Structure formats: C-alpha cells, structure tokens
Length: 242
Image (tube, rainbow, N blue to C red; front, side):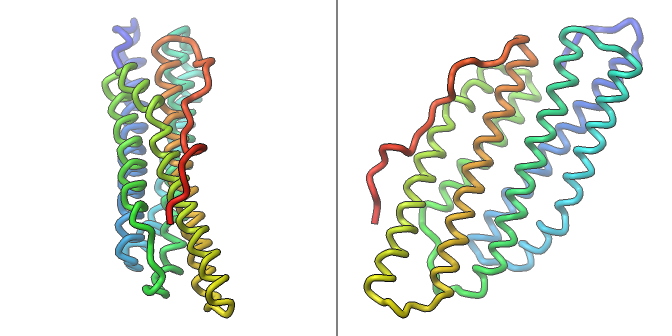
C-alpha cells in the first residue's frame, strides 16, 4: 500500500513487511482451499492429509501479523490512514485463518467420504468450490492493488455463492429424504456421507462470507468508513432441484 514516505524510513519498512505477511498468508489460504477441493472431488486421502498437516502454518502467519501490528502501534504510534491499515490487516489475517480452518475441515470430511466412493458428490460442488476460490483470489488482488472497486465487486457477488449453496443443500437433503422413503434400511454410511456433504457446503459458504468481510475491511482501510448497508444475499428463493 502506498502510504507516502514517512520521516522515519524504517516505518515504511515495517508497514511493507506487514503487508508481505498478509499477502503470503492469503496465498497459503487460497492454496489450502484449492487443494481441499481437489482432494474432495478426487477423494484423495494423501492430499487431504497434507492440508491438515499444513494448517498450523496459517496459525503461525496470523500470530506473526498480530505481533507485527502490535509492535508498529507500540513503537510508531501510527495515526489516521496508517492506523486503519495496521488494524485492518489484523482483521484480514483473522478471516484468512478462518478460511484455512474451513479448508482443513473439508479435508477432514474428505477422509471419511473417501471410504465410500459409491456416495455421489453433487455436480454443483465443483462450481461452488471454484466460486469460493475466486472470491478469495479476487479480494486478495484488491488488497494488493488497493482497488476499492474490485473489493466492492467481491462484496456485491456474494449472493452467487449463496445461490449455489442453496441449490446443493436442497439436492442433498432431497436425496437423503428420497433414500429414506424408498429404502428404509438404507446403509447408514450414505446418510453420514450426505451429512458431511452438507457441512462441506456450509464451509464453502463461510469462505465466501469471510472473503466479503475482507472486502469490507479493505474499503474501510481506503475510505475510513464501514459499510452500513446489508450485503446482497441469495439462495432464499431458489427452486428445489432433484
């Protein structure tokens, strides 16, 4: 971010280092999410286990960003724009850590789904994963370029993920209901897998929510004010899909 040159050049270095750490954390969170979707769609246990093993890296990234921000505040006593930027980066790191948690959660559920390859994953799940990944990538691009309009675009398009979430959840619930009616003694594993698929769907919805939270923080950093209008939501009026 271009803050202008400060009297103490090391202050600029501190801010630049903080920004680099946020960007590195964003890249790791995006990579974890992408890998989680590959693992899920392929039921790849090895990839899922690697995602779970790497999750502490995101936690460490967040701790370093928090420590760096506290150090800047204590030593530099930033004002106005600089303080907003430092404070906002801590909030962004929190959302990125949660996105990483959702990727880990998807990986854990993949380990269970991999045991039952006969249980189908909804076709729209891949599209939902792509949409979630795109929101994370776009919002981090807006952070890099300080592009308020791109952050606004991410915020405005959150309803597209909601629409996919609603469609998938209705598909899974409908399938569960039909299976129970047609085959009362259906193997419990199929119901268990469907439940995990519902949680995966909600995890991806939450990824989109955190991406829009980051978009709001970026706009706060740039403008000094928080959005007061509710974000567009979708999914409420979607017809049921069988």
